[in-house]
Image (cartoon, rainbow, N blue to C red):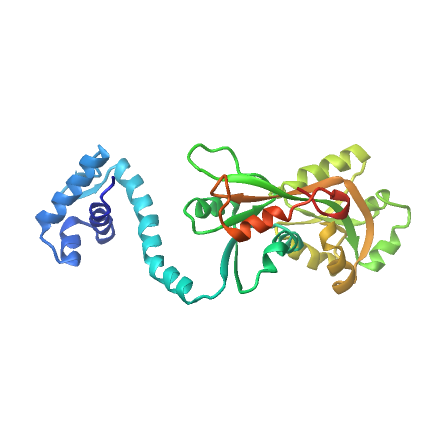
Length: 300
């Protein structure tokens, strides 16, 4: 078993810029700190420091060790707060990572079974997909929602569960939609279009649909964030696609017009967990709430 006290002395030495300064911070003898770090090196089977003039510097193995040590002790610093919050909370906490650009209506729809839980404390964090998977593997998150499954990676033990499929629909301000009266989808050639960037998994499916339909779109803008895309569409910049789960918000709150339904293009959604057999009761609710009726905007 790794001796975390030895690892801590090594980490402090890297933060302080040397063993002597680490010993001063730890209020220990230099020889003691040096001995403990050598014990760590023996346990790991590699030297972590190498001479550099009158001082020392990290080896390649040492640099790799300090990156992981940084994560370990950052988590350690969070432990007292997490325990205190858990002890004081009367409800159930659910920490959800949301892949950047994921439609907010889809997030709300997927999490709906969990949000009905009394005393729920929901924490949603939006970030890059790869960064969220790293946080999930370190158990900083309970689940990650994304528009793609986690890539195969033997060093990253995470598991993807399909939780929804939603067909796309096209929306535009009433004035813009009225100007294109030749039927859907041909009318899309008469309007400027706003699209998700190629960062979104659905972008390739949209372009494939354009090609199969023989459409030559006039792309006026590309957006990673679906909410920002809708705002610019509402302003009159162009027609844009959104999942059918967004219909009520777009036609009601934003007063946009439905131009046409595109059941041939479906956006897929996944809940990614750090366990093959999910233990968190609220993540279990999310997975149990999945359905298969794509026509109704629900799926498994």
